[in-house]
Length: 321
Image (tube, rainbow, N blue to C red):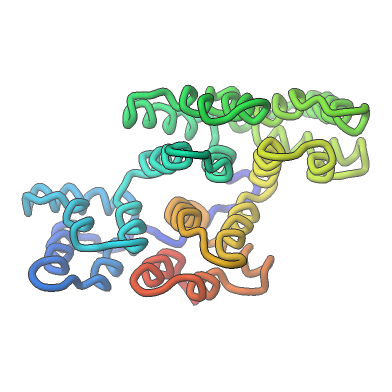
């Protein structure tokens, strides 16, 4: 999603990386009486995903132990959740989060939207393949059993990879699509939901940028205003997320983080998921957007909402003051 902003991560590969030294330092931090949690944070929250994978493999080959199992036995609570999440490949982590959103009673539609809406076709295909490998069940089938109506149809379109590849742009078609959206909503009594979710699930993000510009020329209103007037519920939330991710993904994720920390209680699942998943993509952009939107730094907001080693781990991933 780098066609409209330059993604800036907060976690980058450390220079002078030594997988063997890190593996042995982690073992020393967990060996014997007590655990040196700060040492674990200093190593794992400051290494890239590839470097963490090398540490995992070196820990097994040199020490004959399973690093994730050792971490689970020594850590606990939300701090454990952060560290174990960091040790999972990105696709596996997102698949685990999708499964969690659909498991048990009720479905966390917000989590489904947050995970699936920003993905390109290539990323979706990896997630779909990984999900079936992990759970021996097609993601489409699981989603269909947990959702319904237009929301189900939209998510199904996204995960079958019906979106045009990045870079697919047709200016004449954008005018036609904008007109179709107008006629499906503002231009008639009632709303043709299918037109909305078909266009927003099929067109490339580059194409959608053009469509939204043409829509504003045509109707004098933004696509966001149209969605708000014409749609509701999960379908509105999902299509709004796609629109925001087309225009400025960091804005969308900053809003999600703010919502996770707003009011009574904290949505730790969302906090962990976004900070871990975006730390090597665009968490710096999200930080900048958060401060601009809420006149408060992301790190200060997280410090206010969390405590202990959990707080220290998240702040290490966020980086900066």
